[in-house]
Amino acid sequence: MSLFLAWMPDGATLEQLCALRDGLRARDAGASWKAWRKDAQLHMTLRHLCDDPPAAPTGLRTAIDAVAANHADITMQFDRVEAWAPALVTRTSPNDALAALLKDIDSAAIASGYPRMGTQTPHLTLAYPPRGIRGNALAVPAPVDPGLLPIAARIRNISVVQTVTVLGYRQLASWSLRQA
Image (cartoon, rainbow, N blue to C red; front, side, top):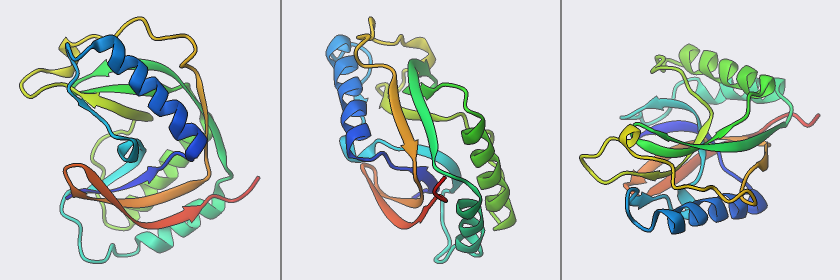
């Protein structure tokens, strides 16, 4: 059961991300990628916190209150699809505002007692390979339809999310970023 900070896409962005996923799944025809993410699973992890969360995250709410108050909404763009070990992901183009948000979220998490667990590269997971196959040995289903990318998106909220089953998430809290 993981605990993490995430961006959950709004309705219009979610529809575009689902269209990208569905287009890639149709091109893959089940040959490589098996565990395609369901609509409700599409999110961008901003910071993994821990795998066995405490009953009440100590100080996290106050720390994220401050982060949200210091950042305006962020416009970003998903502009490419990559095969990583172990996932098929869509990536965002370089974005200074998003990098600053991720840095502040990381600092807030550390100050709240959640140790750093590696660097976060902004991405959204679309699928996982079958068990026993490494993602970096698989290719992106090609060609990616040029009508599916880029996808413009806006981060307006930060949510703390907990996995509740293999296929589900529970949003525990949400913070609105400061309006520009």
